[in-house]
Length: 472
Image 1: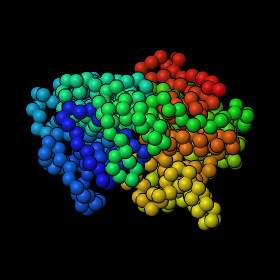
Image 2: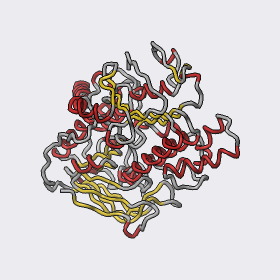
Image 3: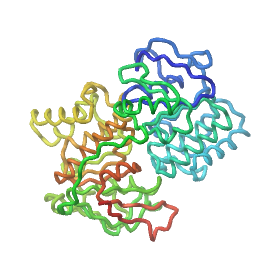
Image 4: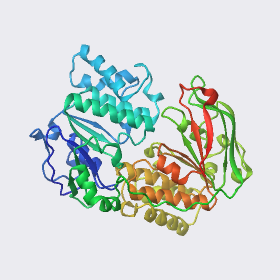
């Protein structure tokens, strides 16, 4: 991000847009005063909050990052929400009312003693927002706060932010690729240019009506702009790859997330796993992928997938998994191993013993297809959230396994990169790859899924906890 001239007035509500990698998250981190010093990068120009250098205004800004895990500090929910208030020296008698009020506003209905490690990704996102709201900052900064939430969670978080802004009059800046979520809450839209500077700045309706088509071309999810969807044919009836029967999944036997799961994944099929935050979608995916043991029931790889190995994926070695099941984790950083994007993409093919020429061919193709070619030499951990997600998807595609398990594959994607991911996955399915995708993205599910496996929440009737819906 460079050459940015921007002035925000007190009480303004701003939606910050731009293509993935345009520098939106960098702007928010700078406004929050956590951008770092000279040893962490180069900086020119000035940035003032209330007339003072942003790095000297502790507590004036509250920032919720793209990755909620990076903001979880303490082991219990109540303590974690109270942490910011304690650091600001808020009197003890005021802290806990703030904590309970903040948790209620974001709809995180768990005990104060609930372990933060037991929260789902979406629940952690609400926890991070609650911690910021409890500090009652004058400048509220949100980096895609609804990207990993179910539809009900999106509505709850948006409504809670609206209540906070109405009560406090705080200045508000939010990053979100999907304009419709915040369009009627903000009074200004600023669009960053990929090469630096500002593409557009003005009232939401004015910016979208004047620049809508151009913004869609730059990666912004403009309301009414329909994405290009690949043509898909009905399931050709490929062989079964994986079966789950009477399956119970969970991180511990004392707290099962789902039970009674019966599902089959066929070659060439896209199966979407949907449901509310905390329903156990990610846990189910990890269990199907041989990375968590079933609590009960069985996960069985059919001959087309097992290829002579044990029929139980939990017994496979890492190399056996690599060539058979590619898993994309909810948190992209959990699967990065090397110092550059190019090297990251080469890990899987090299582990499979492919020739150097074949490795380079696969890596170059994925870099170009997922718009990562200009970042080939970058450290994976320095990428934007959307870029990290594309890289994490690309790392498993590089090994070309017959089955993919993808946890929120479109998280953090702009309009253009979303279409690229959908098109690429559609091609893979057409060529016989089985795909299981955990997703809250209704557009993704509607565009790609052949079937939907809907999980119920943990507080709902488990006798009717799961169900298959035919999409096509």
